[in-house]
View 1: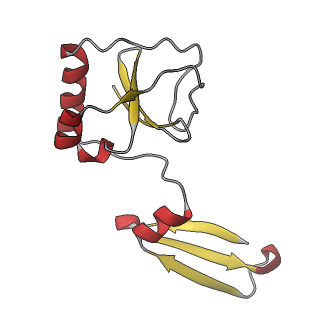
View 2 (view 1 turned 120 degrees about the vertical axis):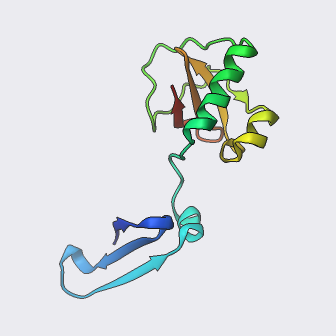
Length: 126
């Protein structure tokens, strides 16, 4: 059984193998960030404060229609299938490339980024 032990700077992870959940006899596997992406689904990403401003200004300027969702939205939550996701505008991708692979909604004055395949919330810009 593999268990995540730590995540270090630059996406470096360390996993420890325990036989029969005992502490005797273990081996370590160290992977870089790209290997991590292949092994585990990415659940969040970081947006710099200046980029957050660009995103919020776009939503206000373009009058993006807010989405009504009954459930509370939080990081890691899965949005219901009836919530219509918006394609990230090319202007955002140019200024904020980390949003390229996501879609979004405007919810309660917040921009919620969603992984389109799983519909999982990966970032909320307030």
